[in-house]
Amino acid sequence: MKRIKILGLIMAVACMSTTAVAQDFSKYDNVREITSIVVNKSMFKLMSKLDLGSDDEDVKSYLELVENLEDIKVYTTESLDYGKQLQADFNILKSKNNLEELMRIKDDGKNVNFYIKPGKTDDYVSQLLMFINSSEASDTQSVLMVINGNIDLKNISKLTSQMNIPGAKSLENIKNK
Image (cartoon, rainbow, N blue to C red; front, side, top):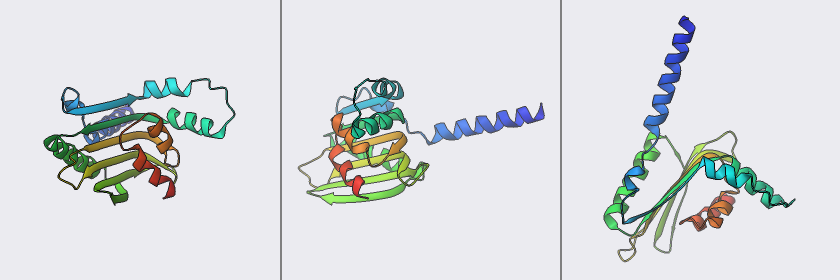
């Protein structure tokens, strides 16, 4: 009985620490100035069950990728004020989750930052965080993307490109890392 209580306590602490680390972006759901895209595990399960009738390796790797994803959350805005809020949330999330910088890109007036939480192998991560903003006053677009799951870095850009997710083009650079 004592072991059961200890195990229960450990499970409760583990659940609390997981929810404390998760960032709640639902505050942006009803904000007119922010476009949000949220794809959950249920949708990925449906996508992975599609019978594409193909022996193509790209199709197989795509289906395997979506089967292992938990969620994708993308928030984009042209508002300078909300862009600053997205950047603040980005900074909080990367600190709370102890994410490692994967790479930074500064190109054509855009700043792109990628952070990861390591996964089961060097080719996989459990969380990918991306933030894009502009260094030019005339361009106020900001994009925050969070992907959770067992993420294959070599194939993630294919998925985000096919889903027309803002910032997907920047993910193509990860394949070369």
